[in-house]
Length: 101
Image (cartoon, rainbow, N blue to C red; front, side, top):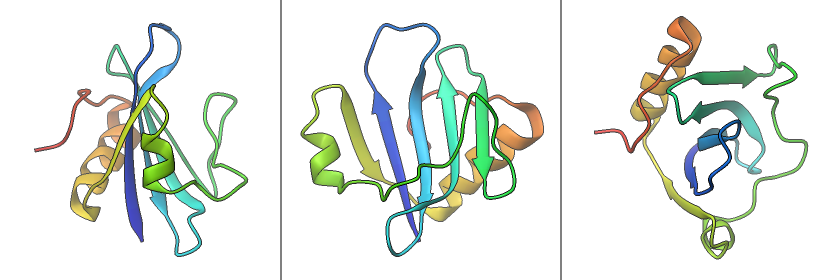
C-alpha cells in the first residue's frame, strides 16, 4: 500500500485542503480522508461513501505528475500517520490540518 498526502492550495472555503489516500498496488484508492480548512474531516472506503466524498474510479496519477500541478504539493506518508488521520476522521470527524509529526 502507498499513502499519498496532497495539499490542495486554493481559496475555496467549501473545498478540502488536504487529500489523503491509501492506494493499492494498482494505485486505486482503498480508503480516503479529505480535511477542510476548518478542521472537519470526511472519510470514505469501499463500504462508506457520501455525496461529499467517495473513492476515485480511476487510478491515482504518479506523485511526480501531481506535483507538476501548481495547486498541489504531494508526498508519500507512512501507514501509521494515515491511521492517525483515519481514526480521527471516523471517530470525531475532525483533524488538524498540516503534515503529521
